[in-house]
Image 1 (cartoon, rainbow, N blue to C red):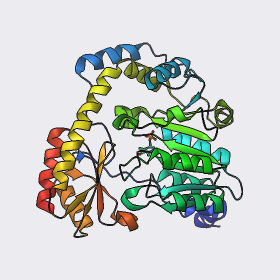
Image 2: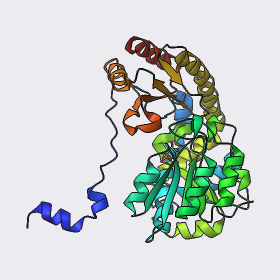
Image 3: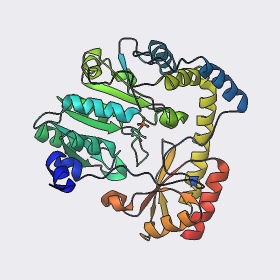
Image 4: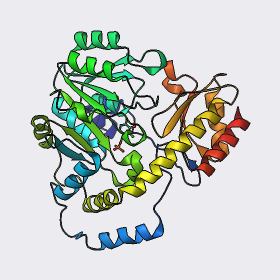
Length: 359
Ligand SMILES: *Cc1c(COP(=O)(O)O)cnc(C)c1O
């Protein structure tokens, strides 16, 4: 038996049929494709951070429960004291843990689309069916269609990214609450972009026992740390915790996240710059003939090439050293669309100049 036959026999078909998540090589590029905060810390803050790391005992396993970090998170994020917190190696890991706990024959995952791709990728990886329900006009929730789909498919969980990626908008609170009330499954509100909007559903947790709120420090400015957290009723989190691998949050991440949250003012200043720069970038984008941009409550902007030349424009930007995300191949609502992360003022200018030339 050759190795191909062995792979065919041993590896699950849904794994063989999928492709690994690909990240383009970005060395030397103006990197505006992954919703990263473009700012680093001032040298004196980096020095203080390195002092903290000096004391981290790398010969020991990390603190498994990370109680100090959790306390800091609770303060920094105003997490309701009655709610539990589960830490993940990025919020991606928490999506994986949650779906591993829910996966059983016939159990399904539902989400309005287009949305964050990992819900579908992880659902399929654990053998669950993914039910996409198209968003309505201006990427608002199509509540009647969603309620009908929830009744028909009885999903174990519905994911709502709010603000949504890649569309950048928040959903109306009334629509979201209608869905929560209509669901006998879990509803996870993914607030990865909480820093860039004033909308949050944390306060709703006490009212709905099927609601969970997912957050991450990635978009806030700490993507390299890989730290996400799930907030909700401890009855759910205790179950998910059984599937969390021991020591999933490494010692350097625990110490660094704690340090960063103690210096939250710095991150907040960066966020304030990014939010102001986002408004400038939106106005500039929307004024380019042939481009339609959507208002955003995140740190990125979705825009459409009205002449449907997205691939050509992406290639031209790439040749000019600017990396953005091409969403054209996702089709449907995203036809002709690219997504650009808000960078520094200089990066945004370089992007806009390259874009004007490309269009
Ligand atoms: C970026 C993103 C995530 C992933 O966050 P990590 O914590 O870096 O894994 C989750 N949800 C949405 C909607 C995102 O855009």
